[in-house]
Image 1 (cartoon, helix red, strand yellow):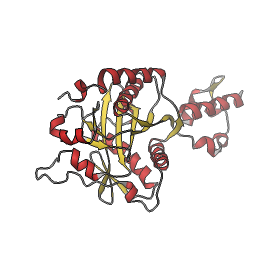
Image 2 (tube, rainbow, N blue to C red):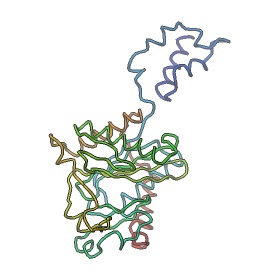
Image 3 (spheres, rainbow, N blue to C red):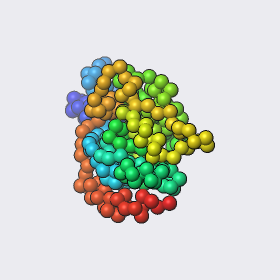
Image 4 (spheres, helix red, strand yellow):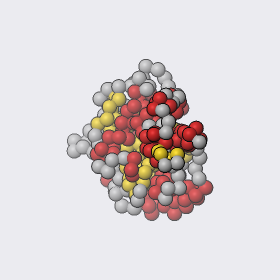
Length: 300
């Protein structure tokens, strides 16, 4: 019976992330807690494979190259699914299949971009569900979104950015880059911005999505985005990590490094997964009714 209870303890620890002492105190043999029924050395000498199990498991999805409207719709669909507890915490990678300007939810398009250049270059405009400034993205930028339960991040917005950006920093350091977080939402390498992010909280869930510049097209950025500073000069000191690394990493290797950064920061195991049927349907509806329509994208 003692061995059976011990096996139950190990199962609980592995699959639910519970503290060993918590489980032992709440399992009883007869009228005695299991903690008092087995020798101390029995549970302090558990195999390292059990002791080092991650606290939780995350779903990791790689959608590859997707349209701007679908990518924005997927972010929101995953957020809503996490709010309903229909899916676990998720890390979602994608690359946009065409040049895109992503507009913050409350921005005015004409104040953020040069519309004539947008049209001339065939740049798609999509208004995301989160706030923040307009950004230019293309196939040279890796985009990733995390949806997590609120309890996994601090309530304080600044501190929550610090946690998620810290995960990105850990990932970039795996690539040999001296990355650092510049509050609120920038990641710097050698003093130059390589990543920015935005966050949205809804119900019990938090969406944090970020871009990581791998290959920089500065000419396109300057042609399409209006400057943010008063003198009309460049608004960003941007760089692509591809030009800052000693070794040429593939996009898949960059994704792997970022995933390991999140795994380390959140003490989470990454399990490759897929969208649920409801997430797909929700995203398709949002493309048709919202993110694929000018009425939403040029709202303000």
